[in-house]
Length: 282
Image (tube, one colour):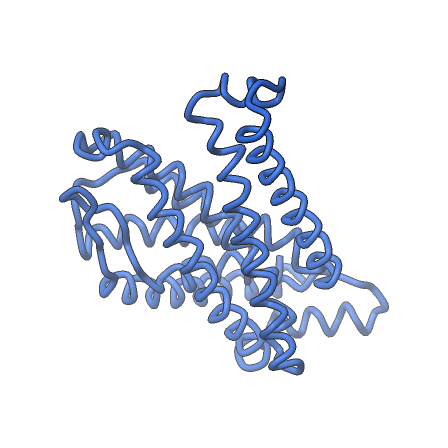
């Protein structure tokens, strides 16, 4: 059994290395968009293969993949100064993606959909309520409480509305795809992959925005909000696209690649009447 486990780990390491190589190749042809004359926004498809180890093999491999791609990617194609804190957040991205996927992968997709519909509708209603109170009842207790927050009140007004609109749009998009391609294998994974990418990518993008601003005075003059918004929109739009690609690749991997030690272990568990974890889906 120890020998089998070693073979499984070796297979995972080899496959992770291949995914890292693909990610580095894609990263080397990425597009860097300047903001205020400095590197501020990268458009790339590399995240598909950087996060695949997290989905396939768990958070440990996700963190390793994220860190290696960040460091090696900078050595291959440096753009601006090296920022070690971005390497740390790249590792965190992979770990979080692995943990989120581990939590979501066995959940019922329909229940996730219903929960998200309820969540985004509530957020939208709260945002609309805050708008109504602010504009029509400026002397109310709630309005005064919002005004006391200064510029941060926008997060509880327009921020909630923006999140609700984007969330509902994603759910409508997912519904349309499921209706158009009801038998597509990717339907099983898309929403879960999208949530994984967003829950890993959005916080990291926010933290990275702060870190990048520390290195460039021109960005500090621009202000965090104006720098963060285009980066956030790019993260969300790319997450939608990359999730489709990843959701398509997972069943392809499951059918054509996930063989050998991992499959044998699963078969042994099934034949013995026990329900074990498939080592390649930690």
